[in-house]
Image 1 (cartoon, rainbow, N blue to C red):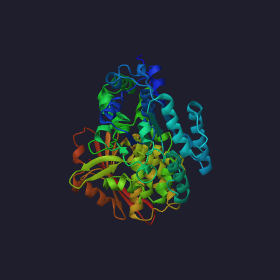
Image 2 (cartoon, helix red, strand yellow):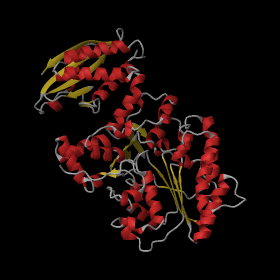
Image 3 (tube, rainbow, N blue to C red):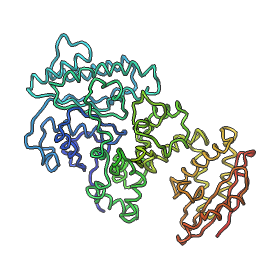
Image 4 (tube, rainbow, N blue to C red):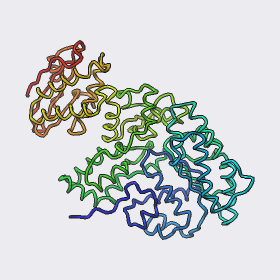
Amino acid sequence: MEEIRKYPVGMQTFSKIREGNYVYVDKTKYIVQMLENGSQYVFLSRPRRFGKSLFVSTLQAYYEGRKELFEGLALGDYEKNWVKRPVLHFDMSTAKHMDPAGLVNELEGKLCQLENIYGTEDWAKGTNQRLECLVKRAYAQTGQKVVLLIDEYDAPLLDVVHEKENLKPLRQIMQNFYSPIKYLDPWLEFTFITGITKFSQLSIFSEINNLDNISMFDQYSAICGISKTELLTEMKPDVEILAKALGKTFDETVEELKNSYDGYHFSENSEDVFNPFSLVKALRSQKVAAYWFSSGTPSYLIKTLQKYHVGILDIEKKSASVDDFDVSPEQMTSAVPLLYQSGYLTIKKYNPILQSFQLDYPNKEVRLGMVKSLAPNYLSPIQMDNNGFIFEFLEQLYDGTMDGALQKMQAYLASISNRLSNKNEKDFQTVFYLIFNLLGAYIKVEEDSAIGRADAVLHMPDTIYVMELKYDKSADEALQQIDDKGYLIPYSADGKRLVKVGVNYDSDKRTIGEWKIVEC
C-alpha cells in the first residue's frame, strides 16, 4: 500500500512543519513579491482555516533569520543577506468571547510576555504606551528595525459584530492598542495584519493611511489556500493515492475534489483556490467529506443572517459592486459582506463593463453546509427528522420506486406544515430547494441551474428522473411543460432510463397533492 505523505492538518507553525518534514506547499514566493514591491504595511483578509496564521508564522521565521528552514523554497533562493530582526507577534485568536475588562487583561498578558524579553519603562501604563515602548526598546537593544505581526486582529470583535452597543467598547480598546503604529514608522521594518473582516478600513487602523490591502489583488489570490496548479503538481502523488482508495480515475478524483472544495476566487482574475483545510483532511483520511463546514459555523454568522432576515433563497447568485460586498462590518446594510469575507460566498464572475461581481457559494461543501444550517428554519427543527426523510426517500429511489419516494415526501411535508410557515409559493419553492440540496449530498442533483432545465433532475445509477413542480395547478401541466420545453433532450444520449415526473403542491393540504410518473 502506498504511503500518504505527512500533512500538517491544523498545524500553523512554519518551523514545526519544516523540521517535521511535513508536506509544505511553497507560499514564500509571495514574501518575495512583497520584498520586491517594498511593502511596509500589509493587510490580508481571508476566511477561517485558510492558512493565514501559517503565513504569519512563515514571515516570523524569515525575519528571525532562520535560513535553514527555507532551503529549497523560493525565498531561500531569493534572499542572500539573512538578517535577524526583533519580531513582535500578536495572535488575537486567544481574545475571543471577552468583555472589555477581559480583553484589556488579554492584551496586557501578551505585552507582559514580550516585556520579559525587552523590558519596559515606568511611563508606559496603557496598552498603547506599552506597545510603543516595546518597539522602541527592541530597536534599541538589537540595532534592527522591528517587525510587527498581528494575526486575526478582528477575533475579539467578530462575536459581537451584529451588536452595535457591545461592539463599540471592544473596538475602542483595539483601536487604542493599535494607535501607535503610524507614529512608530521610523522604528518598524514591516507590519503584517490578518483577519477575516475589514474593520481596518473604517476605524481600527484608520490612522495608518498607507495600509496596503492586498486581499483582492490578482497576484496574491492564491497566497492562502491551494491553487489548482499546486494540487496537480505538488500534491499529485497523494491525489493519485486518493483516487485508488475511491476506486476512481485521477481525473474523476480531481473533479470530485474540485466540486467539493474548489471555487474560491478573491479578485477579478483570481486563480481557482481550494479550501486547504478540507483538501488536506480529504487527502490524509482518503475520504471526501465536509470537513471545513463541520469544524464549526461561527455563531456571529448565524446571528447576522437572522439580523438581516436572510432567507436561504436570498444567498445565491448575488450581483454586487465591490463597494457592496467588500466593506467594513460597521458599514453593512446586509449580510452579504460578512458572507463573502467569511468564505461562504465567493466571486464567480466579473463584469468589466458594469464593474460588478456575481457572488455565489464556492462549492458543494459550503452550499450543503449552509443548507443544513438553515434547513431547520423551514423544515423540521430536529436535524434527525430531516436526515431520516432524506434516507427514506433515497431508499425508495434506489429500489426504483419514485411513487414510494413521493409518498414519503407527501407524509414528510404534511408533518412539518403545521409548525412552519410554508403557506405561499415562495415558501413552497424554499422547501423544495432545501430538499433537493440535501439530496445532493448523496446523489447528483441538478436544481434549477440553467435555462431550459426542469426544476430538478435526479441522477440514479440506471435512471434519470426529470421533475417539474407546480403550485396549485396539476401534475398534467407539469408533465406538459417537460415536453414543451424539451427538458428531456439533454439526457437522451446518456443511455439511462428516462422518467418524467409531474408534481403539484396543494396549498390547502400544505403538502404535495397529486403526481404523475411517466417512463419515456
